[in-house]
Image (cartoon, rainbow, N blue to C red; front, side):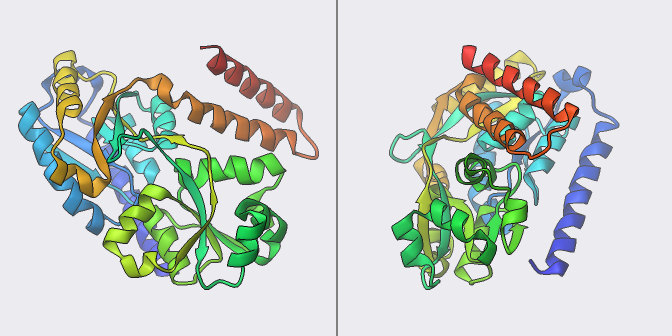
Length: 332
C-alpha cells in the first residue's frame, strides 16, 4: 500500500474517532429521548465517493419516513462505526456479521433487520481472488485455491480486507488458515490489510498482490462501478454461505423511534434505490441469526490457541473461556 495513502487513511480514521468522542461529551443515553437527528453508520466496503451516491437516496427515504433528519456517517475503517455507536455518535448502522457481533458486544448494538438480495437470498459468499493473468491461476483452481495458498504462501503476497470484515477476514481466516494450523502473519512473503472490498479487488486487478479476500456481492458491485477491473479478477476459492448483513440500532433508542425505524425497513421496497446495493428489501431479524458468525470467531480463536507450540497459563485460561463461550452459544 502507498505510504502516503496509509498515512492519510490513518489520519482520517483518527479524526473520525475524535469526532465521535467529542460528540459524546454532550451526549449520554439519558438524552436519547430528546434526539433531534439520527446518524446512520456505513461500513467502508468501498470508497466514500462510490458509497455516497447509492446511500443518500436511501438515507433521505428513511428521514422522510421517520420524520427526523438522518445523516450518513462514512468512515475509512469498520471499527470507526463500532466506536461511534459505542459513544452514541451513531444511532443505527449497516454492519457486516463480524463488525456487528463486535458492536453488539461493546457498543449496545441490536440487530433488527437483515438485508435480502435481489433474488430473495439472505446470505453471501467469501472468496479468494487473483488476477486472471497471474501464472498461479490454473494450478490454484485445479488444486483448490485454499490448498494452493497454504502450500505456496511463502512465495505469495496476500491482502485481507479489514480485521472486522466477515468475508474479508474472519471467514477465510478460519476456513483457510486456522483449520490448517497456519498463521497468515508469518506464512506469506508479504501480508497487508487493504481496508475495503473495493481496495482488495483493485489490488488484484492491478497486480499489486497475488491473492486477496473478497465476496460475491462486492464483485457484483465492482462489475457496475469498474467493469474493466472486474474483468481482470478470477475467483479461486468460495466459502460456505454467510448470513447476510444486519441493520442494527442502539438498544437504548426510544421504543417509539425504534418502531418507526423498523416499520420503514420492513416495508421499504423501492427498487431503484435498493438495486444499486444488490438488495430487494429487508427481513425481520434478531441477534441470534449471527450466532454462526460468533461460533466462527470463537472457533478461530480456539484453533489458533490450540496450535500454539508453547501455551502459557494465561493462554490455557483464555482457551477454556473461549470453549465455554462457544458451548453457551451452541446451547441457545
